[in-house]
Image (cartoon, rainbow, N blue to C red; front, side, top):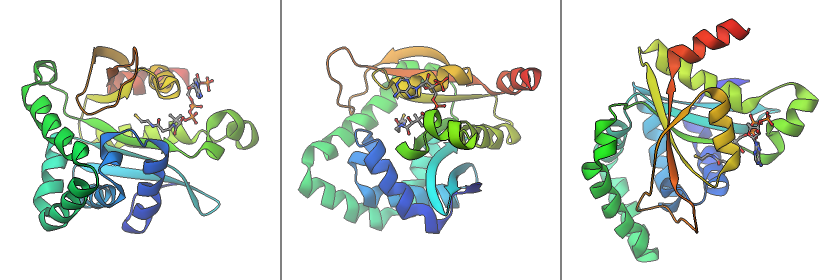
Length: 222
Ligand SMILES: CC(C)(COP(=O)(O)OP(=O)(O)OC[C@H]1O[C@@H](n2cnc3c(N)ncnc32)[C@H](O)[C@@H]1OP(=O)(O)O)[C@@H](O)C(=O)NCCC(=O)NCCS
C-alpha cells in the first residue's frame, strides 16, 4: 500500500537512497543531509513524499515538489544549525563534495537553459528496492510499485494546478530513462551537471511531462 512519507520512514528512505543512487549529489552529501532533506519534504506544504509499504517493509519511495528551488531554500532556512554541522562533517571527510556544492549553486544561478525553461515542479528522489522491481515482482503480485508511486506524485501536483513536471536523469541509467519514456516524458535537452561523476559518453537528460496529457491519455487507455 502507498502512504505519505512520514517522520518514522525517514531513516529507511534515506538509507535506501544512499544505496540505490549513491552518485546523486544529495547522496554524496551523506545520510545526515538526506534525513534533513526528507524532514523538510514532510513539513513542506508544496512538496510531498510517498512510500510503498509491502509486508511492513518500505519497498520504494518517491518525492515531488511544486517548486524545487523553494524547497531547497526551505531546507537551508529551517535547518540552518543542523546543516552547518552536516556541512562541516562533509568538508572534513570530503572537501571535493563541498566544492561541488559551490559549483552547483553557480550552475543553477547562471544556467540559461534552466532559466528559460520555466518549469519549477520536479520529481526529486525515486527508488524501488531490487526485490520489489516490476519484472519479477509484477509477475508474482501484479503490483507495479514504480508506477503507483509515480502516479501518486503527479496526482499531488495536478491537484495543486501544476501542468508540467521535470525530472533530471543520467543517460547511462537505462531503467529510469525507459520508465520515464513509458510514462510519456520527453527529453527537453541534454546537459552536463558540474556535480555528477560522468564517465565516457555519459551526460544528463532534462525530461518534461505534460501532466494533463498523461491523465487524459491514461483515461483513454483505461
Ligand atoms: C528506476 C526504477 C525505480 C524502476 O523500477 P522498475 O520496477 O524496474 O520499473 P519498471 O518495471 O516499471 O521499469 C520500466 C521499464 O524500464 C525498463 N527497465 C527496467 N529495468 C531495466 C534494466 N535493468 N535495464 C534496462 N531497462 C530496464 C523496462 O523497459 C521497463 O519496462 P517493461 O516493464 O515494459 O519491460 C528502479 O530501477 C530503481 O529503483 N533504480 C535505482 C534508483 C534510481 O536509479 N533512481 C532514479 C534516480 S534519477
